Length: 159
Image (cartoon, rainbow, N blue to C red; front, side):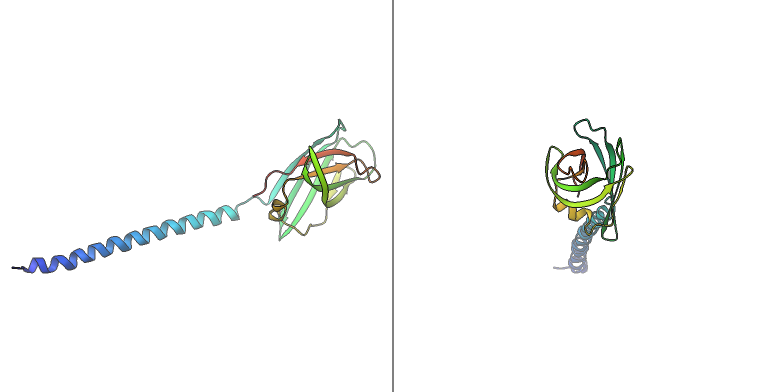
């Protein structure tokens, strides 16, 4: 014979099971939301400035630093160089490959004049460059002697 307690037990058991199931679902979603938040945070906090150290080639004595800065969907490139002894403009390019195996120039930058290069904004982003990796920044001897590289720096892996 069933008692009043037995009749109340089944609805109570069903309620407890539902609470556990819905609690589990809520907990799982909360974890997924947190994982999504972390992914978005990492993407938003990625560096928008990359520094590339440029070292001498064949004892040219020319060294420097090139800075790639992404801003408003464009890439700004500036360079500061040391060890230049002549007054000749030195072409600079972002080239396919690396300093040990340079490929063709992909983007020409402003020439180095008085130790500096300040290029107009490029119509690309760091993500756009990442697709074209590996890349290097190469400084040529002069406009007339564009086959001789006097300084070079490899672009680090971009995410």
